[in-house]
Image (cartoon, rainbow, N blue to C red):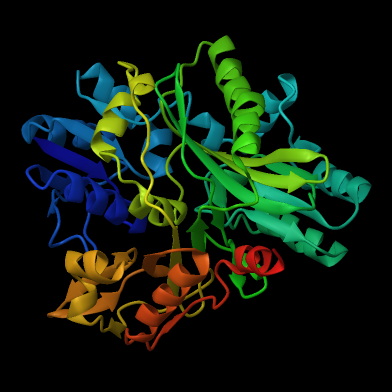
Length: 433
């Protein structure tokens, strides 16, 4: 069977890596290039946002199943188009994808159905947004409602920060149409966690909780990014708390969508803040997190393709369980210097050959997922903000983290930077216990 993966970043490399390990007999196609995908999938050179071209490609190639990685094609309606053409596909419809493509829609839906989230107001002009921010006081959060590649949430610790955030949204239009609506919300205090479920619209299958590190610098300092690293499992949520979140947050949001005539199937991700009064939803994503996927997929021992094919309207997910590898996984993002602002591309990087094979994972528990790289004149060079996801498994987070950073130290990365503290909260918990 041919399997098409839409997207070409670190998350998609991780998806293909896992799918290929489970099914080496299948042929894998991918819609774009990066330096790590060349040896594991055939590039079909189709834009992930050109819905008609994607359908044509799947039909021409006689693709048996398609997995949509990024949020932008989902928001553009790629799943609707595939289903209309009778093509099997994993992911939510355009209407369901509004949970991520419009923070304003998601906040209104949560408010209407009593799903816990931060106090907020939605504005289409600067003055009312500033007025509500003044009412909240600082710190507060200013968010572009639309898709902004993980960079549209601005934490404002001072009045000057609020003014700068609102100027970025309304005056300079840094986020373009994504800031046509702006959400201003209270700053929640607690620890963040990511919970992801697979669903066919009826049954839900939770993945292990994980934790992303969104701020650019150590100690959770600096601007928000698309994610500088992640680990799983995150032990601040025990099994009973995970079950409660499924019943009080995930099922209600699916019911809220259903009440509006929208059926959700695919992958549903809740970014949570664990406050002193319970978990509250920070954001919804409608696909695997990036880099959470890189920290979760190496721990899954179950056939991933079978899970994804069951998390569709055709159903059958209730017949599955997930078997997890014992231990933990840590992924560290190596990013271009300057990210998430301006950065240089085309800078050579050198990865030792022994880190670029599947035997590295089988032997040492290490795998390097490429996010923003390309091959140029026989050399591997940088081609994006987030460049590599250096990932490792181990008996616990501390062991996995040590392996990941040891592997990172073996890579020649002259123009890259990374956080040195991925998993620090988990380590603090372990040492305190």
